[in-house]
Length: 114
Image 1 (spheres, one colour):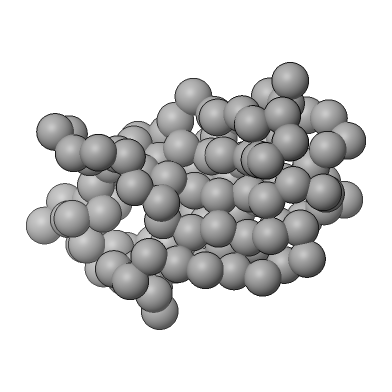
Image 2 (cartoon, one colour; image 1 turned 120 degrees about the horizontal axis):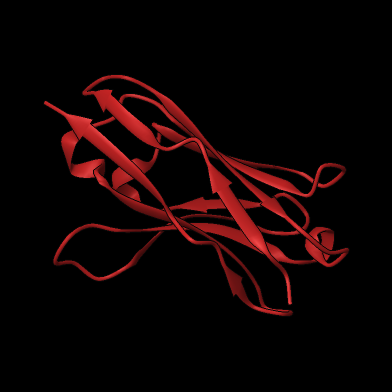
């Protein structure tokens, strides 16, 4: 199974930026799709951004133009650069890999104050 370890969450004021990182173990990384999900209190987990093994990306509408997902296959790491953060971006952010050996990270808290 692939292990995913997230880092980079924290508290930031509205309009600020954060960069999340997700380090993956195992050689499957470069072949797998990577994604970031988030879950706010009382809400369902939602897909934020996805990047394929070839580098194609897709974003949920609410973060388009503000968030950027990228990956470094040499470092087995995927990133989520989050700019112009809003209070509604507050959530626990989870890293995901699949469809081979589907795995989730433990989550990292992002809190945006108004």
